[in-house]
Length: 143
Length: 143
DNA sequence: TATTGTTATACTCTATAACTATA
DNA sequence: TATAGTTATAGAGTATAACAATA
Image (cartoon, rainbow over all chains, first blue to last red; front, top):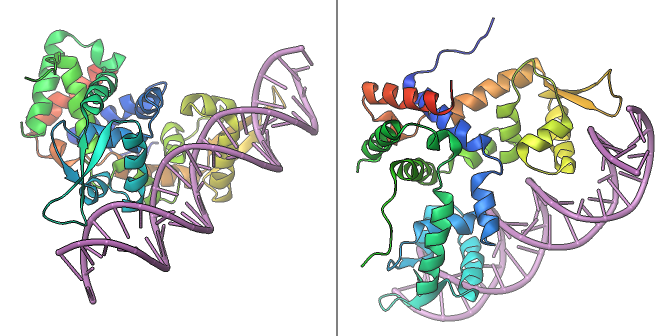
């Protein structure tokens, strides 16, 4: 007999979502990152950097849940490609403020377009189900 | 003015899911992997290996979308910990069949319990919404 | 003294290529 | 000849620790 307990609805829903993500071939995040020649972490950085926003590198490290020294390298490479730039913080000369360039914002749009392409499992739902799913998730994130 | 096009419902739904995943602190998959002292890829291997199933290593490489040499290392480490074992395939002596041990199946249960814990965004939905979300995703995967 | 960001370094994970043994 | 799995090796990504500049 199975020892697997029944899942409550929230747990099963989340497991199904992760199942859709894990079943993707190729795996979504590494594949899109490779397509744009950036690391998965740099992809996440681009995703979180909204055009016009300026963030200290320490804030990026905090969001990415990684060491600051790692952010230095990621910013180095993206800056060398002209996708973002370091600016001085007038209020604290230790701080570097990171902001997307126009080209960076354009690349980000193309990255997000690929990242957000719905997997087949979502795409084949009826339009009514897709809207219901969207509305549920909007409520989930409190939007 | 923004150049961001309106998203169709499926795309927005998927972007919201990824947003929930990306916003997790610490990031779910690496954190659970670290908790059980395995790599994220080994975590995915455990997730996909159902108790009782036996799979050739080549099939694991195929599912994980990685090189076979990488599977050798992952299986080495998990086998050394007693979580899975290599068996000979009577039909083809080149093949090694991988199967979870009883301990491996037990560890897998604990891994999945952590992996599938719903994020706050999902947990705070009403029970009716959680069930609706589950039902939509069941339909999405064709279950 | 503490903090921001950088550099130097070691470790892990991964793919590539060459190899063994089977088919 | 081709395939399954292994080994050796090099490259990318990461964290740790020591450092410089500034607070």
